[in-house]
Image (cartoon, rainbow, N blue to C red; front, side, top):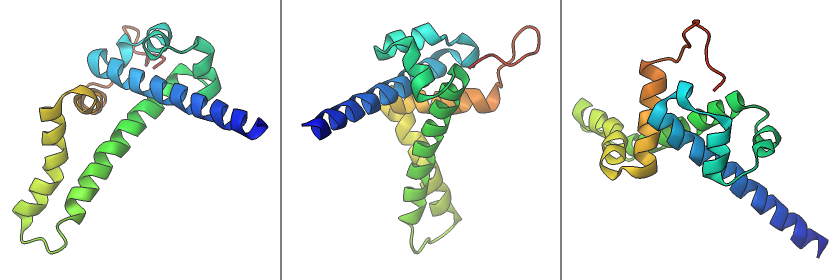
Length: 137
């Protein structure tokens, strides 16, 4: 019985963590790092503000984890595509396999599109504040 409760708590904690990551990815994709607040993330995820400290340590660590998670999913899709070309017949096939995950994400919209926007925003427009300092997220 105690083990069952422990498992339920662990699962609830994982759902909270996953919800925070998903909310952060969505908000980062919409507004970039400078437009994301802790309160907005936790409201969207249905989580308590203290959950960010518990699961990630800080808002910046949450944002970093969300970006890392998005990149991992994208790169895993690219690796799968390239691996499917066991006997690649040419550079064109390899390039197409590399690009297919991006094209699918753009076509699918939703969370996949949010991932692509997050990756693009961070890579193309590194955030800075008016003072030149990087934002908390």
